[in-house]
Image (cartoon, rainbow, N blue to C red):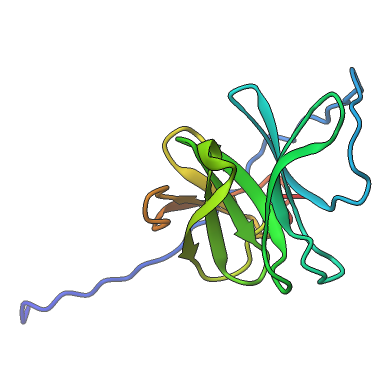
Length: 174
């Protein structure tokens, strides 16, 4: 009556009535791999394999590298300082993006320049998995939440949450 308005925002969670199908996987081929690598991300890009590692011993072993698929040997590599635990990686438009677990940073490397560090973004919370759909970076943080990010600014574009017939699916990256 007085012209004022009231806004009420609510979050609605919809549980699926579909029970997820269990799948069985089988090994079709094996390739050598450095057993000391604490692999956190793998990605094929333009016919090459790239790996991102973490550093559970906090010894400065976090890196990104191009890896020879047949020998398992790292061809090019770039590391982060002690205290940075690398997580998921993805490559989009000749840039390799690497999340850090608890440092709230995403580093970018030029694929065509021997993985030279070319930039960084800040974000809030943990970084776990990273992939892309050709348009957006898609990031997980260990919860049921998936965040779509702009690859040029790392700004949040949208978030989705993943549920099954029992509730939220935590640890999506695992």
